[in-house]
Length: 317
Ligand SMILES: Cc1ncc(C[n+]2csc(CCOP(=O)(O)OP(=O)(O)O)c2C)c(N)n1
Image 1 (cartoon, rainbow, N blue to C red):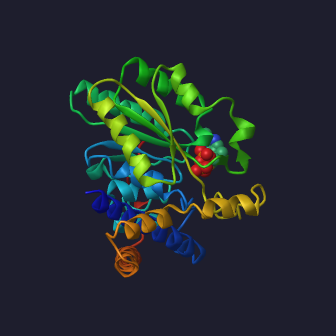
Image 2: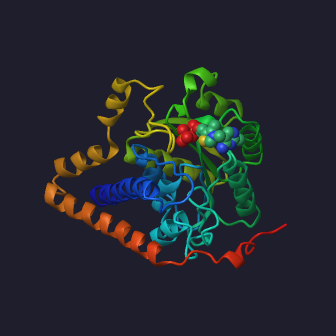
Image 3: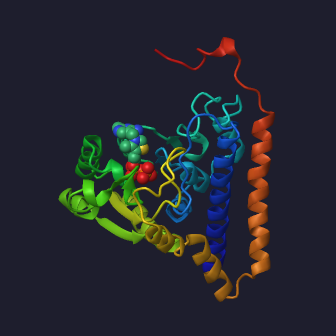
């Protein structure tokens, strides 16, 4: 059971990492349109939470959200086509990297507005409570979101009404070039305590640790006890986005230290140490993951661009 789950985690993380590496390459080639914020190094947070959720649980994510969507089960073809601004994308190519959505797996939206998805997840949780389903809503956000007003309004209502919601922080300690230590007083878990809800700190580079705290939080939410905050400490290996090398405000030593704590290598080592897998069998899993992403790229390339006369289609006012 443990080995099977770890293998699924490995598969999820290598799929996310390769998807992200290819996203950067396709952006450089001009095939991906707009901007891309990759989550290389942070795959364990998305994976640990995503694999604990049910397909009908709701999720909102943020600008660095490809990993969350993949771990929640979103179709890679539809994601890649969206990034390449094609008709077969999840938003028919109108949204791009920061606007992934797929209601068939509970993904309500990604959001380019920092903190924007948090109140939406609370709304989804309120709907689940009113309809008496036992669905849970998860809001992913970065550490840069936790000083925004809407974040606190959302936490307050969720705690007051005991809504089935998980607040999950991909805490990579930077918002663009701003270190959290220079922008944030106190801690996220202390803020959770201020709203009377649990605030759990977890190693965000260990998918099993993230999975276990997510399961506890889900059980609490489904039994009507209300929300939980999960503060998952992790690190983004790359720069913030296209024009940021990520090295002007972080030391080489810091980056190297976090790369040495690679979540993919951690799980690879665990699977081999327990005798469940070999180097060769894991290489085959990685190859299969790369093949899925490569097929999604080919699918997206073959998908048509929206027609100019359809420019107003899907717009509402
Ligand atoms: C309300 C709002 N303010 C500012 C921005 C510009 N912006 C985009 S991403 C970002 C940093 C977000 O940092 P964090 O939430 O920690 O996520 P990370 O990029 O580290 O994953 C900022 C300031 C924005 N998109 N929305």
